[in-house]
Every structure is written in structure tokens, then in C-alpha cells.
Length: 145
Image 1 (cartoon, rainbow, N blue to C red):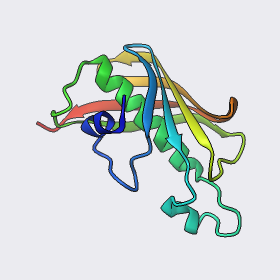
Image 2 (image 1 turned 135 degrees about the vertical axis):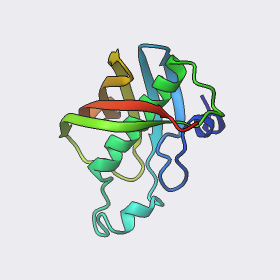
Image 3 (image 1 turned 60 degrees about the vertical axis):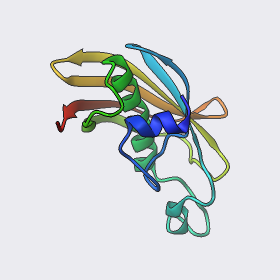
């Protein structure tokens, strides 16, 4: 999935769109997406100027955006709908290694449960095959029609 299709599903825009490409997507199962981390990211000017590190909360947001794409594709939600995926919870978030400018952040999400509009995902992020963050995320898909 290329950026234009991603933008047709996600309401986020610069500087908050954190998924650049979808590498693989198995409907109802899992997704692998990519975020290229550039020194030009606006958060690096303040986090931290002398040692730029991607904020952990933005890594979680990138994972949530990848999971949202998986959910939209799983329910075959048309891109022109007014549906939005909202965070419902984060459990077990762990940050194992800093994410730096120039890194390619691989975003992984697996659906572990989908009951009555609540989705649960096992997510993790990797750089060069090393896990840098992980969390269980919960979300709900709501339509604003």
C-alpha cells in the first residue's frame, strides 16, 4: 500500500501521519508497515536538540496507525467513509532501544481479538531486525456518518 492509499484511510496529515508504506497486510491477521525516521521530523528540534530521539509516544502512535489500517482493511471499510479508529487502551508498553534519525522503523501489528467493536492488537516496532518497542493496543472503530 502506497502513501496515497494510506492517506485515503487515515485522517492524519503532516506532521502526524506516521506510516509511509505498508509492506504486507494479511486481512484479519497482521500488518507490517514502514516509517522512515528523518532528521527533518519536527519533534527532533525539541526531543532532544543535542541527541535527537524519536519520542516513545510517537512510536506507539505509529503502531496504532498501522493497526488502524489493518482494521479498516479487515472490515473492508471504504476509504471515503467517515470512520475513525480511536485508542481505547495501551498495556505493557516497553521501549527497548532509542529510535534515531535515519532509522527505518518497521511497524508490526497482529489482531489478537475483535469483539463488539473493540479491537486488541499485539504490536511491536523494529529497527534493523531489533525490537525497539512493544505494546498491546486496544482501539474502537467509530463511524461519524
